[in-house]
Image 1 (cartoon, rainbow, N blue to C red):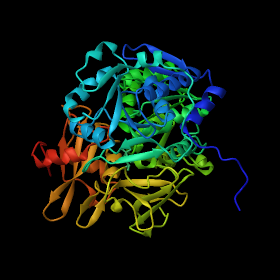
Image 2 (image 1 turned 90 degrees about the vertical axis):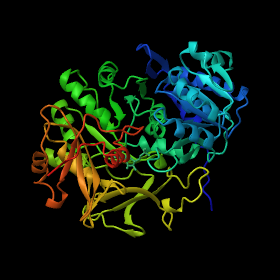
Image 3 (image 1 turned 90 degrees about the horizontal axis):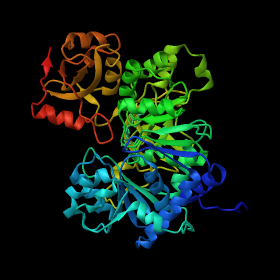
Image 4 (image 1 turned 180 degrees about the horizontal axis):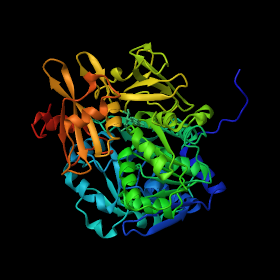
Length: 545
Ligand code: AMP
């Protein structure tokens, strides 16, 4: 017997409907290319989203069609987050940091019919114009003078399209399982793979991230989304902020630490979200030029592990609470969030920072286990295994991709490729990516743990560990280091001395390379693939014992 309750489709449109009816005067604030602030209400957003939906329909875009976006975080991009799904389309976020080959590949693989693009990003498309002939419309967000761009297809000014469009629009999406978003994984190996979100999965993800045991967004929050809108649906923040009625602040193209510090202070930000490299440079900026950021209740960090010394420094020196989250494109992306338990409140500060350095327990809506293939490992904080997940917002397959069986276990768990231990409270501690583990003499060495510990050395600004091929041991750890002071440098002996109290002898690196910069991926993580290539090509000056 079924229950006798109404069934209301969980759609993106219903999130915005709620925002404009209940929180119509709350704000979306954007730093524009000329550095001025653009301010609009959710009521304005609602009107412009309806106009965008009508404008796309008038161009012949049909429900189910893919519409690309290529730009920074700003109000027009937020309009696309709502407006494309509003007319039944699928928003395909394009990462502005992809290589031209990858960009052309994903535009064609997705068969984007139209692309909304920042004026400043047009050259990226012009570079590949002969390879993306299937795109019929290019809609320019800003920099109207750039409409004379050299692209195939019809060129439109976004604001002109909106001016001409009607503001009343009835969302055609009745089936909550309809697709609404497409995001390709950053693809460190092989071609990028597309993850296709549905209205239902994204709606449930929004409820999931807004839980008090996760980001817990409310109407009292001012949310700064530093994580790009072209990375993993901006961690769900545009939808989460709208559903909660929080003010949403977008940094535009200005991701430098000084500009972020100014926004944090001026907009009294309570929740800000970004990757560790951004928060690392913000920390150094705030030490040099302190500003009052006491409004922050959670500095959310994810994308890669936030080193414990940085979590501690933020809290001890700046009074900022860091909230660690884990996830991936395939999990929409939030899988776990490190909100302390009541019993963690009684811990001494060092033990409390140990907890905060963990990625936290799975959020309700995601089932998570560690396993070696199908063999589940205990939650004793010692056994490690691959994180495997199931859930309302976890991918069940990749978009138009064959041979993906290796990504799922025979009983249907999604294999994340992350290695972790879990404590008896369910708090995940990621020890590595399967492919980044260093295998020395048959034993695993965790590059992440070495990086976290070495970063607490006063003369080290950034460090990444990768495997160096070794004839006896198979692989040995190489420390790639950016010192604070290049002239002063640091010796290998000193590196080993710093790590020795915490790790077995065989974990200590017998080689290092001093560099001025560690290569980063398109989403700001250490690009260990590039470091490995630098080693192979002999581009790194390796200092040995
Ligand atoms: P992406 O799909 O680009 O978001 O990348 C997802 C991957 O980023 C995960 O599989 C992890 O390897 C890594 N990652 C995300 N969040 C964290 C975190 N808090 N700590 C460690 N690794 C993370």
